Length: 364
Image (tube, rainbow, N blue to C red):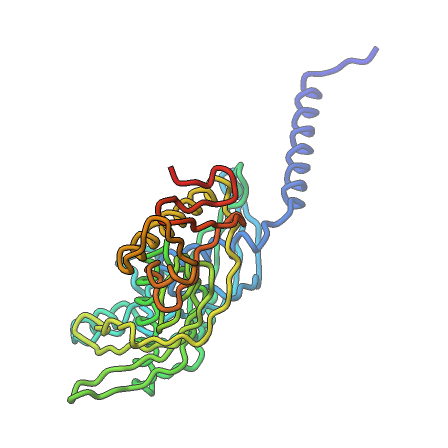
């Protein structure tokens, strides 16, 4: 007969618990490390948010990593090096802890201050002059926490490892870059105010140089841009149809005031059309085609009545399409309207409405 003592049961339970704990520890040690991509995205979001898109993360490399556990929660410390690029010239206030309330580097990029107080504030916040399109190499550590939804990383200690050469020794060049960036921003904003009429495709800086007008110093930015017209428009004495793309050469002038750059509004004469090409115009629906066709018929009928009035024509007189071109209100390069659905127009006599060959395309 086998006798089981209570002490044996207790020892077996302790031994089993130890095995389970050891196995759990083994599984935790074998659990996969978090992807560095998760940490990279967390750093990218913080940089873009604090800099308002003026500083970009352009490179990221994990240099070391170590798992840990605190209070039953899995964690991961990730060491990294990264490259950032400045989207504008100014002062990188890399230690602006009062604004953002965290240690390590901060990502505040501001225009260079012209006032003494502003320069003191920049210096207090660790201000470093930077130039647009230059880069800096940073390093630091991020801490990850394993949650039900996955790994979540926060940015910890960060520091500058190296900074690419800037043009701080050439203030005029830096100032020119600053003006060019501001002028481009303002032009994009101006075009963005009329999204139903025009769409900006590309903006390219050609030259930016210093000017001196009656003792007032400033800058002149020469640029080219490509736009897509969403409505018919006359530009530089050329008729541009909706859907066509236009390449324009233009310039903007400005001076520096106490609160930043003051731009001179661009006049139509400041821009010239270099080229325009037909765009791909989306095909209209049957109902849209019908409405556009009826609009064309209204224009044709109005032109007929004006033609008859000015030339003393009778009710049975019938004009040709060429006769109506000057009365269509489409400028010197006017073309006769075309049915968007491919129908054929009949102008008819003055006492009859113009018609389209497609059923339903008719004046009421």
